[in-house]
Image 1 (cartoon, rainbow, N blue to C red):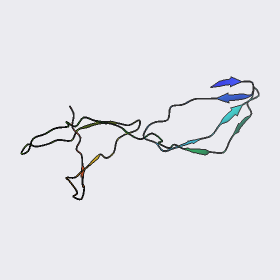
Image 2: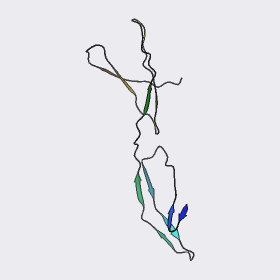
Image 3: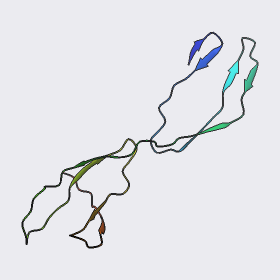
Length: 102
């Protein structure tokens, strides 16, 4: 903890797999008398969307298999990835993209 006059602070780095942190603050004086705040909670909100780099080739030939490819990162975790594609004026196809180690 750091002190600036009567203000005390402690900086933490919350785990990425939590959405709520519970805390209370305790203090003791030189005579051993303690006091505590009530337990409080802080809601942790993910405010950063995933970053997507589209690595898909921009050309293919008929009769060949075509693969959509993207590098996707997130400050917490990527949970789902989809690709939506269509031909001409047809209704779009919405497909789940698989994960693979490169």
